[in-house]
Image (tube, rainbow, N blue to C red; front, side, top):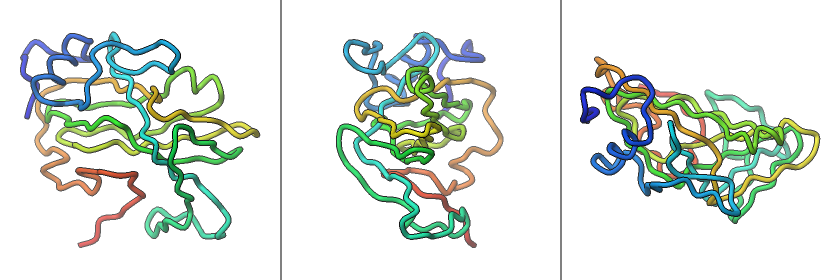
Length: 194
């Protein structure tokens, strides 16, 4: 799948994001207008899309005294929680996933940035770029940089995705059979083997 209009270029605006979301199911469910009343905003914005956190959280713990090793990762490093909020311990982090499922066209790269509401509380979101051809629910990492417990809300805006169009790449994430393709749940670190 590639972008439908040859005039799209650079960072996409709301009109272009809407067109791709509706015609190509690029974001599902898709919220056409920013929802802002009594919530941390989510939905379509001027030059991006503010995604929501699902209510499934993996909170980092050092109770088991395991080593954090990206090549040999164990789920024992996390405690699972479900609900409308997640409390991140001081100087710790948690993983969650988006409510929205993304299908990225092969001529697009998507960058994720944190929302200012969380950043102003010392809560930082980190996500690597969504590569051309990737699809799935996005696993999000939230770091609590403060010495106090911090709250993240499910079903409300947690990060903004910025869509950048280019020419179609030679090898997409789908072509490479990427290890994080079609994520359904919060996905821990992986290393490809054979």
